[in-house]
Length: 215
Image 1 (tube, rainbow, N blue to C red):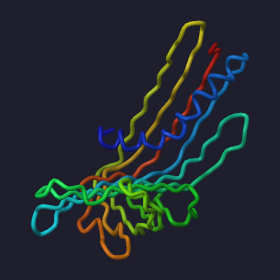
Image 2 (image 1 turned 90 degrees about the horizontal axis):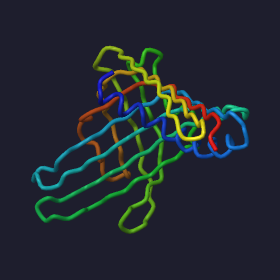
Image 3 (image 1 turned 120 degrees about the horizontal axis):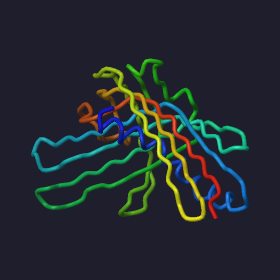
């Protein structure tokens, strides 16, 4: 798999990484703990300039629908959307806006990915926070993704061993395509994505950890 796709697909593993310390602690009691997740995802980065060439706008959109299972509990599925916007005036060396937001309580219908990962779409509203002022406002995402590459696959297996017979096993498998994303990330007045994406991906990830005998 191309490095750009591999890096983007790995984003969906972040939620699972949070589970690992909890599993290590329980394994100290002689348990073998495991956790895994799988699900589709999209990522897109945008860069544009105003007519003067001074103001650069960067935006990033990431959506995924992971089904996570921390055994022996039940599996849970969430629909997640994250958005960030950064505006910078190079002529005056001034940051005009830096805002980011995240939600995992979306209706599954707002995020669609085709079975062959050749097209996808996400349409939802996300509350974001202005990092400089703390003000919260909504950004509306209306984005379509169209694949531009063949389907590529990659996988990785690791076995990390620690003192005392502790093992942490990880299996990662990703499938996806490079893509072009177009549409709007807007606050209702300004579109922060007036051009198509500079990079984008459509794909899916399967990731899992097993923690054995960690003191």
